[in-house]
Image (cartoon, rainbow, N blue to C red):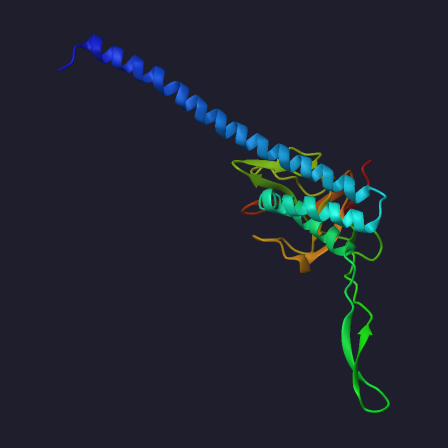
Length: 222
């Protein structure tokens, strides 16, 4: 049996060797997390800035395609609502393809003629005429082991959702859905967009697996 002094010495040496390794692992995870978030924030900022720039349509589409493709690959799973907003904006900017249709001329010969393109229905702004007066928004999304909040005006958490009547302010552009989205977003359920800084009034809230939801109506920001 080893003397107590030897046991103590071994414990001290083991602790001394173990602490730097643990610290290095923690620092690496910390660095990777914040490096990824910084990249996603940079891409969000670039995409939103490009959407507002007054440049030629072809140049704008090229810039958006590049940044949105990178965002989709790197950040899309962690921020599905931003992915939806960006992809919808890009699709609306794409030139509509002209599809051929078969017609018969006076001599009975079948020829192809161009059919006017069917333009994709634009995604309107929540609260403007022609769009539903209420819809569902994600109050927050789960990222790693924490919640990323999409609205200000209430201390939103998994155990503290805003009561009916609460007025919230969107921190960034958000999609508004006709129903709660479970898992991957369904583009067919997207009916409008809530702009950054716009306010909504909560009707009812609902927790979800990866997002916390609220059905809202447009509101003044007081």
